[in-house]
Length: 148
Image 1 (cartoon, one colour):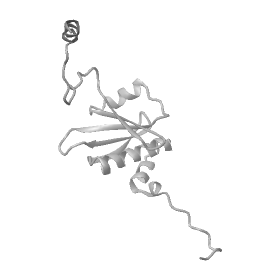
Image 2 (cartoon, rainbow, N blue to C red):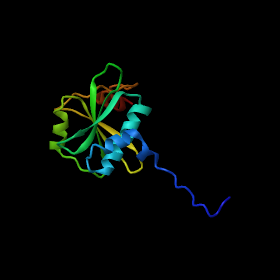
Image 3 (tube, rainbow, N blue to C red):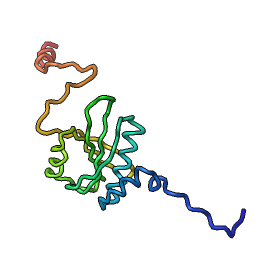
Image 4 (tube, one colour):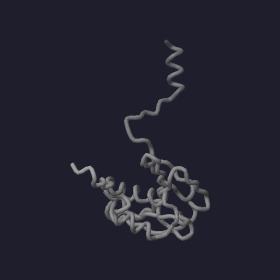
Protein backbone atom coordinates (compact mmCIF):
# COMPACT_ATOMS: atom_id res chain seq x y z
CA UNK A 1 0.00 0.00 0.00
CA UNK A 2 1.39 3.36 -1.02
CA UNK A 3 0.89 5.64 2.01
CA UNK A 4 1.94 8.76 0.10
CA UNK A 5 -0.91 8.60 -2.41
CA UNK A 6 -4.02 10.35 -1.06
CA UNK A 7 -7.14 8.22 -0.90
CA UNK A 8 -9.71 8.96 -3.54
CA UNK A 9 -12.90 10.21 -1.92
CA UNK A 10 -15.98 8.22 -2.92
CA UNK A 11 -18.19 10.15 -5.32
CA UNK A 12 -21.74 10.94 -4.37
CA UNK A 13 -23.61 8.89 -6.96
CA UNK A 14 -26.79 10.91 -6.47
CA UNK A 15 -25.14 14.15 -7.54
CA UNK A 16 -23.64 12.38 -10.56
CA UNK A 17 -26.95 10.84 -11.68
CA UNK A 18 -28.27 12.33 -14.96
CA UNK A 19 -31.81 12.78 -13.55
CA UNK A 20 -30.45 14.67 -10.53
CA UNK A 21 -28.35 16.81 -12.86
CA UNK A 22 -31.44 17.50 -14.97
CA UNK A 23 -33.45 18.53 -11.91
CA UNK A 24 -30.62 20.75 -10.78
CA UNK A 25 -30.60 22.49 -14.18
CA UNK A 26 -34.22 23.57 -13.58
CA UNK A 27 -32.76 26.10 -11.11
CA UNK A 28 -35.45 25.92 -8.44
CA UNK A 29 -32.92 27.13 -5.88
CA UNK A 30 -33.80 24.76 -3.04
CA UNK A 31 -31.25 21.94 -2.98
CA UNK A 32 -33.19 20.06 -0.26
CA UNK A 33 -36.30 19.99 -2.46
CA UNK A 34 -34.26 18.82 -5.45
CA UNK A 35 -32.79 16.02 -3.33
CA UNK A 36 -36.31 15.08 -2.14
CA UNK A 37 -37.62 15.11 -5.72
CA UNK A 38 -34.79 12.82 -6.83
CA UNK A 39 -35.46 10.31 -4.04
CA UNK A 40 -39.16 10.24 -4.93
CA UNK A 41 -38.32 9.91 -8.64
CA UNK A 42 -36.14 6.89 -7.89
CA UNK A 43 -38.82 5.34 -5.67
CA UNK A 44 -41.54 5.77 -8.29
CA UNK A 45 -39.49 4.62 -11.28
CA UNK A 46 -37.30 1.90 -9.73
CA UNK A 47 -39.16 0.53 -6.67
CA UNK A 48 -42.82 1.09 -7.57
CA UNK A 49 -42.32 0.68 -11.34
CA UNK A 50 -44.42 3.67 -12.39
CA UNK A 51 -44.56 4.41 -16.12
CA UNK A 52 -43.46 7.58 -17.89
CA UNK A 53 -42.07 9.30 -14.77
CA UNK A 54 -40.86 12.78 -15.64
CA UNK A 55 -39.93 15.97 -13.81
CA UNK A 56 -40.62 19.63 -14.44
CA UNK A 57 -40.34 22.98 -12.71
CA UNK A 58 -43.37 24.64 -11.22
CA UNK A 59 -42.65 28.33 -11.84
CA UNK A 60 -45.36 29.45 -9.40
CA UNK A 61 -44.04 27.36 -6.52
CA UNK A 62 -40.34 27.22 -7.46
CA UNK A 63 -40.25 23.44 -6.89
CA UNK A 64 -39.62 20.31 -8.92
CA UNK A 65 -42.85 18.42 -9.66
CA UNK A 66 -43.02 14.84 -10.88
CA UNK A 67 -45.58 13.28 -13.19
CA UNK A 68 -46.16 9.65 -14.01
CA UNK A 69 -48.61 6.82 -14.41
CA UNK A 70 -48.99 4.32 -11.58
CA UNK A 71 -50.11 1.68 -14.06
CA UNK A 72 -49.68 1.51 -17.80
CA UNK A 73 -52.51 3.39 -19.48
CA UNK A 74 -53.65 4.83 -16.13
CA UNK A 75 -54.21 8.53 -15.50
CA UNK A 76 -51.26 10.90 -15.19
CA UNK A 77 -50.62 11.82 -11.56
CA UNK A 78 -48.69 14.79 -10.25
CA UNK A 79 -46.37 14.26 -7.29
CA UNK A 80 -45.21 17.15 -5.09
CA UNK A 81 -42.09 16.00 -3.22
CA UNK A 82 -41.25 18.09 -0.15
CA UNK A 83 -38.71 17.71 2.63
CA UNK A 84 -40.52 17.27 5.96
CA UNK A 85 -39.18 20.58 7.27
CA UNK A 86 -40.65 22.56 4.35
CA UNK A 87 -44.02 24.20 4.93
CA UNK A 88 -46.81 24.03 2.40
CA UNK A 89 -49.96 26.16 2.34
CA UNK A 90 -53.40 25.82 0.77
CA UNK A 91 -52.58 28.24 -2.03
CA UNK A 92 -49.59 26.11 -3.08
CA UNK A 93 -51.64 22.93 -3.10
CA UNK A 94 -54.42 24.68 -5.03
CA UNK A 95 -51.94 25.69 -7.75
CA UNK A 96 -50.81 22.10 -8.17
CA UNK A 97 -54.38 20.73 -8.07
CA UNK A 98 -55.40 23.26 -10.74
CA UNK A 99 -53.15 21.40 -13.19
CA UNK A 100 -56.05 18.94 -13.51
CA UNK A 101 -54.20 15.77 -12.51
CA UNK A 102 -54.59 13.77 -9.30
CA UNK A 103 -52.01 14.93 -6.73
CA UNK A 104 -49.80 12.97 -4.39
CA UNK A 105 -47.94 14.93 -1.73
CA UNK A 106 -44.77 13.09 -0.72
CA UNK A 107 -43.08 14.04 2.56
CA UNK A 108 -39.40 13.07 2.50
CA UNK A 109 -37.73 12.49 5.86
CA UNK A 110 -34.09 13.22 6.67
CA UNK A 111 -33.51 9.44 6.72
CA UNK A 112 -35.04 9.15 3.20
CA UNK A 113 -38.37 7.82 4.50
CA UNK A 114 -41.12 8.58 1.99
CA UNK A 115 -44.74 9.11 3.01
CA UNK A 116 -47.31 9.60 0.26
CA UNK A 117 -50.63 11.38 0.84
CA UNK A 118 -53.28 11.57 -1.87
CA UNK A 119 -54.74 15.07 -2.15
CA UNK A 120 -58.15 15.77 -3.66
CA UNK A 121 -60.07 18.77 -4.86
CA UNK A 122 -62.94 18.86 -2.35
CA UNK A 123 -64.33 16.09 -0.18
CA UNK A 124 -64.17 12.53 -1.38
CA UNK A 125 -65.97 9.55 0.11
CA UNK A 126 -63.33 7.13 1.39
CA UNK A 127 -63.07 3.62 -0.02
CA UNK A 128 -64.63 0.94 2.19
CA UNK A 129 -62.17 -1.00 4.37
CA UNK A 130 -60.60 -4.06 2.84
CA UNK A 131 -60.30 -7.19 4.90
CA UNK A 132 -62.25 -9.52 7.16
CA UNK A 133 -64.09 -6.74 9.02
CA UNK A 134 -67.62 -7.15 10.34
CA UNK A 135 -70.07 -4.44 11.24
CA UNK A 136 -71.04 -5.34 14.80
CA UNK A 137 -74.16 -3.75 16.25
CA UNK A 138 -73.41 -2.48 19.76
CA UNK A 139 -77.04 -2.89 20.87
CA UNK A 140 -76.83 -6.58 20.07
CA UNK A 141 -73.70 -6.88 22.22
CA UNK A 142 -75.36 -5.01 25.13
CA UNK A 143 -78.48 -7.20 25.03
CA UNK A 144 -76.35 -10.28 24.99
CA UNK A 145 -74.40 -9.15 28.05
CA UNK A 146 -77.63 -8.42 29.95
CA UNK A 147 -78.98 -11.89 29.18
CA UNK A 148 -75.84 -13.62 30.51
